[in-house]
Length: 308
Image 1 (cartoon, rainbow, N blue to C red):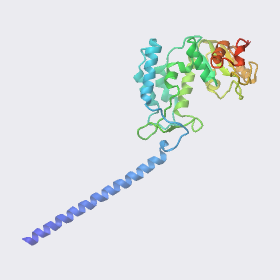
Image 2 (cartoon, one colour; image 1 turned 90 degrees about the vertical axis):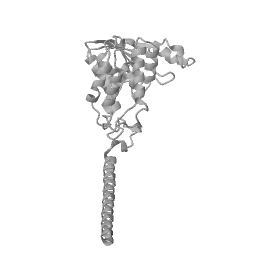
Image 3 (cartoon, rainbow, N blue to C red; image 1 turned 90 degrees about the horizontal axis):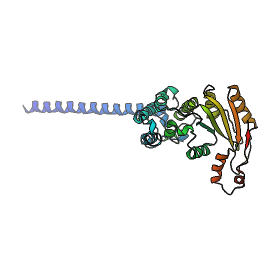
Image 4 (spheres, helix red, strand yellow; image 1 turned 180 degrees about the vertical axis):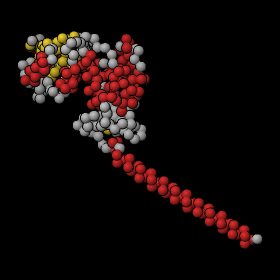
């Protein structure tokens, strides 16, 4: 009887030992497989690459929702029917868990439709290389609107975002610049928003250019030169006023008769727009002089040149 009991215990120990060995082998196999799969994901995930631009803005959802509610509730209550939560969701769906170099216009189409609103005639102000001045001017003069003064532009101004195929679907470390890949979230968004802003313009429109830039005031590669100018509707827009501004104390490299302004005028005339050009448009130059009141250029603020 003791012999049988001993044999039974031995068999139990053997079975238990075999079970432990099998379990350890299964765990080891699982670890190896996980390591291989993780290594594969790291090789293909764009998040593992170091992009050259800043990453997604921290607390992006709160920033977008806060700006949206402020815009439609406080600044323009007539747009109070806009659904800010749906607008945020449509923005998030446009890029989350997506390769940041494969964004398309279709990704942003729902957002464009949800956030679009009419632009009053004669109020559209386009700009190129005059960002700070143009936006200071629209803040002091409510008669004009830049793209950044619309709901879309207001929400996205100075904010960045991009996705990643791996969790959590958003890259907070870095995002690609246009030089790294053209179909990145920021470039595609601003191209679509700029196109929509130009299409909505009507009446007389203004464009503020920088006559102190060595490369020329008008550049075909700019958003204005490549997108906005070609999406102005000649059936809705009657006249384009060019405001050619020079930096206070800066070089006056280009005038209204300059080479790049002539190219711009030619493009506009071919599209049947009337054009005027004015150097150092006085209301804007006065705003420049607020920061440079003692400069000799500011004693000549009334000395502007207009061209038909």
